[in-house]
Length: 303
Picture 1 (tube, rainbow, N blue to C red):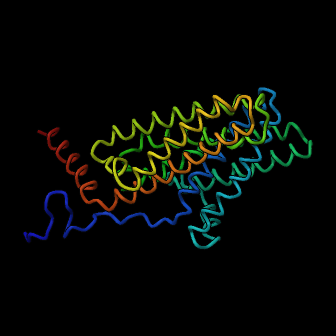
Picture 2 (picture 1 turned 45 degrees about the vertical axis):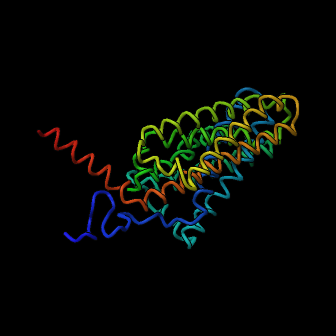
Picture 3 (picture 1 turned 60 degrees about the horizontal axis):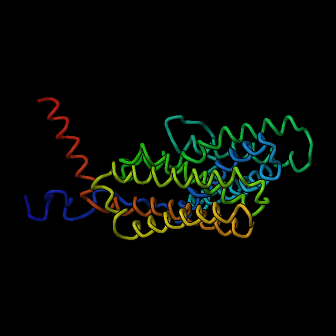
């Protein structure tokens, strides 16, 4: 074999084995807004159930805004509006993109109906049903994008398929609490603050578990652009959680500032995952190494 051919894990002629994802920058923003919309629907229902009507309305409005922005981001990435419509022609349960498109459409419709009925004060039972439907679809909306990227051949995404949905879910919960804080007085924002703390802790734990399971494949999270984004995301999320917990109980300004930090951390978390995927796809060893390990494992089992 030529010395320029396949050698170890360097790939063929030193070129990447996989083609890096061609998604536009709108996609990590879509990951963020989808998570924010889904988690806000859950927070709104929880607030309604505990009699916090102002927090319920604020969370519903935040969620609806995210639900409106999300398809716009997706459509701009697809390039042509009708492509989003075409994804709704039929439901393919084996396709995360197909299921996600239906979840996005259904959750957005339920969220819009709930907000409209809440603002007009009409049909309270129908409003409650819409809020419940939106909250039921919220967790799938917040996490399906993690399933979507994990369903690809990109090593750092695919090998993190067990932990990545938990990273996105926890980050979404934190961002939902953070986004509601500026719109409610501190005495009514208790569930939002608790969502921030639980979300940030869950996000850090799940992210660390993901890196540990990735092992050598976690290289993009240890050095390079993805690593810098990952560290910045953790710093902003932790800082925001500390500010909202220590100062946000008495000051809406402090709560809003802390919430902004948490939102920035949640956004950068999605970007770190997005960039790590691109860097992983360009590394031949990240693709060939796990394939060789699986092959050797099967051969050892047969022996």
